[in-house]
Image 1: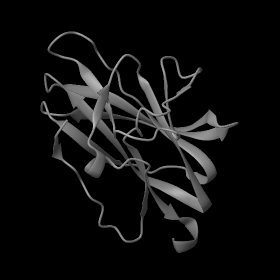
Image 2 (image 1 turned 30 degrees about the vertical axis):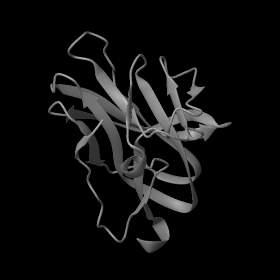
Image 3 (image 1 turned 90 degrees about the horizontal axis):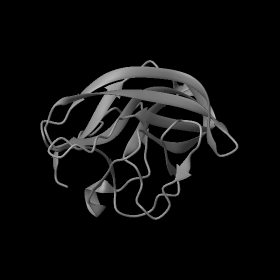
Image 4 (image 1 turned 180 degrees about the vertical axis):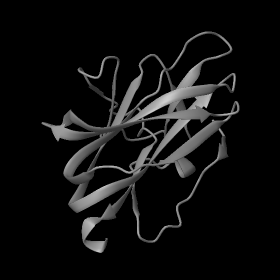
Length: 168
């Protein structure tokens, strides 16, 4: 999949956490479930400032996605701490979206995820994107209660921008 746009952050006060290497590995599209999540870790308290996620819709129509922040619960998404609903229009190309959020404070392990419905109707299939290697930090679910590791299928394109509380 080739990307229409890849946004870059130039904010020196924010750190972008990511596991994917889509710019060098290329992208794959996935469908069949609706919840996608990556686990992240910070060594000090940080506030969530933006969430990035990769999508592609064959028909280019707008999809409504929900972005989530969860606490960690034994290595899986736990208590929901924040959620935002956003519109995503791929224009028929693969896109990495970025949404600025006024997010919660995170510390240690936490999760960033999306509800991004993926359809299977011919000509209007909607995909969630990953790179082509890795996957240890990425999970998917059909019901947000039972999660499956994406092991060896690539890292999901879910990124988070954080700002250290100590640099506020």
